[in-house]
Image 1 (cartoon, helix red, strand yellow):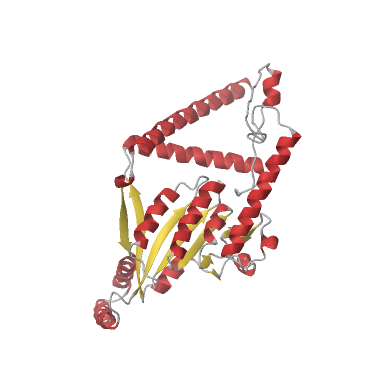
Image 2 (cartoon, one colour):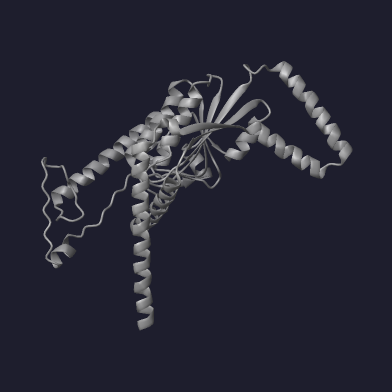
Length: 344
């Protein structure tokens, strides 16, 4: 037992030291990135998805067809492509621009998304379409509010926006999704969680037990409603809950404005639904994966994947990797504390 206890203490100390090192590296790298980097450090990458699908098709046909059949197929395909070029000029053929957003607690990928959207809007036409492959369990309200406003730029320019959810778009993720003119979701994608949650530990009793005094001075009656180290009051708790309720009201209003077909009072309870059930609740428009949607478009649409790539030095790459690891750990811990899988 003594050995297990000592080993447990050693392991706890090791983990603590490792986390501390990760936080320090992350802080240094992020500080460096914020102070030195500007928009000229990144660039837009464009990939023609039609070519990718064609390469896959040719590769499979080469393996499964005999040589004569393969040659005949290639000849017929080239003839069809020639006919299609005569029938559809480049200016008349529809274009689909594909963007990706993988959301964390702070919606940090919005920094890339804003550049991608700006790039696409320089060339997109009203007859074109933008597809956003979205994955996010939600996070901080102001961060996802900014991400949503970036998507509103697309619809404001009259460009059709389709949102595809293959895994999860909950809370802040759904705040983004509801902007779309059309929402697709995989059969077991998790949708909804239109609610708000906030929690924080309070160490006041522990500090008092060890004779540690905390002084908190504010100007303004509600400058600090709840605190982690001071003594919280019933008045502060009441005000904090009022602020949460007001945020929830704004969230519901935002979703209602963008998807008026929803029974917002029925679905804005913080609950989540899987794809098929979400369709019944009108949270989405179709049960379908993004992969199937892209395949259905390849014959009559030119498809382009657009990504913004940021240059990073080695210390910055290590720092961002460390920051990502810390974010995942915190998300897991706070999720367990709240006994909930989703942020609001």
